[in-house]
Length: 113
Length: 115
Image 1 (tube, rainbow over the protein chains, first blue to last red):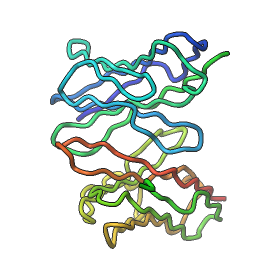
Image 2 (cartoon, each protein chain N blue to C red; image 1 turned 90 degrees about the vertical axis):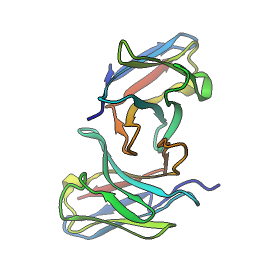
Image 3 (cartoon, chains in turn blue, purple; image 1 turned 180 degrees about the vertical axis):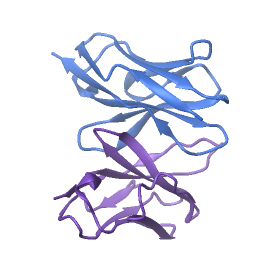
């Protein structure tokens, strides 16, 4: 079975500072990994995905994530936080031969002016 | 493209009443998912369809919940009878099989409150 663990339910950063959201996965097969963002009162939106190609994945809005097999991690980063980045972020995993996503508990990001 | 459409956006009902949530997936997508989101349990997959056929309903909490997909452009999630613990945001998502990767597009959700 596949699962993800997001470390830290809340992250607070200053505007312009680095955003780092941690995600560790558990999978018996090479996984497909995703980061989704949920803005208040909206559905989830895909930020980026890892599908066994390049280990450094670039997504929308300046976010990127690096797949590290040795650490079973897929951490999300953004060099400089913007006020519009305030949202909840979900890491998700899917086995390569199935279409179900298993989501982490989510990390809420607040950005201080 | 209009994206995934859900209706209603908000529903308030009394315990024991029947509730029907509706979803229109993105045209051409052949997978449809129903999720429930609560503070306590996070985001849970309830059921998903492929080409209008239910594939996995193991996440449906009880027999009070049922889902149908009569055609490629419409799905319903029904709760009968509803209970206060069903209060949650229900999301519908759709996807298209592309290179075997599941990239889901979510609707805005229906916020259900059962009094």
